[in-house]
Length: 395
View 1 (cartoon, rainbow, N blue to C red):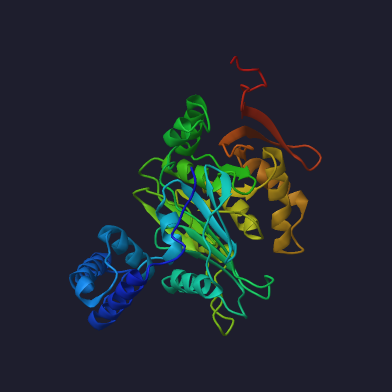
View 2: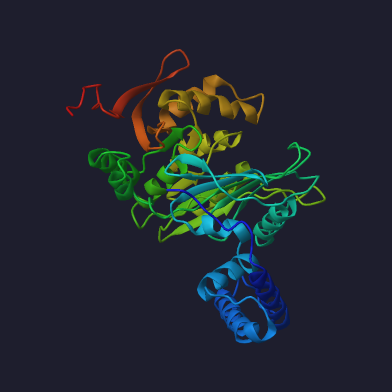
């Protein structure tokens, strides 16, 4: 299915949008906080335009509902990107430059027939950041932020980029938020999902690994959804991405430094604070730095945990997890870290995305609690197409 979007706005819609903005300012209506009133104003202004259009020689708007959507996208949404953001099949949108825009559906990307200007891209980014409390400027040329719907925004600006803003929007999708959804999508079999449900209920520690876009965050969110309802879940992320519906849950995210260089909140600090919040399950959205040490310490003191990590296989995930705590200081060595992983991590679930964009669980391994020559011992639990013990599944 092709992706389309309006390229050149109609002059009539431009005029209506300006009047809607004027009324919003006059009535002191925030379109993000009061979308209902914003839509009422947009509908009224479109009707008003048509009431006077013929008498004043103005262009008549035939598709009033379409014009209202267009106007709302400009004044309350994100302009020409709004149709892509509203499309439930679009997973991610990225802008390489104002003339080169892509979107992904079902793990596969295609170029969007949409052309913007540098000013339009900057305006969209400013609107997206407006409600987040985050900023991007010469002193802070990168930004990660969560949009109101839970989608993640990442922006890089010149001169870190060559000439234009580079923008990525990873959308918050609700289609696959549970293990049952993932079973229906063919990501894992029902028996394996039951094994993981039992692991979460029993308080076992689970590490979800995979490459970028392999579906790690989606899978972690589904695992959290499998926790018993009486469990208190505390999540820690650099930027809010996990969408959890647990009845007893708290979500924490890091914070960038202020203009004065103060006030930053790191993942290491958040992990320590989360442990003071009586978690039955501590969740780290992604382990990529020295916070791995704090997570391991928590897992080895009886706090059930779950996290994601970038890796090429389940065993590679354990090797990477063994290396990251070394970033915490010179007094940390592999002699401490590797045995802590062997006893602190129970299962590693490795996710993969194939060439067709299909995301699935490729393998699950279980740690034995032992190490061999500074390597964590594991045994296979599941592999796509194989049963535990590497027995081929009949097709």
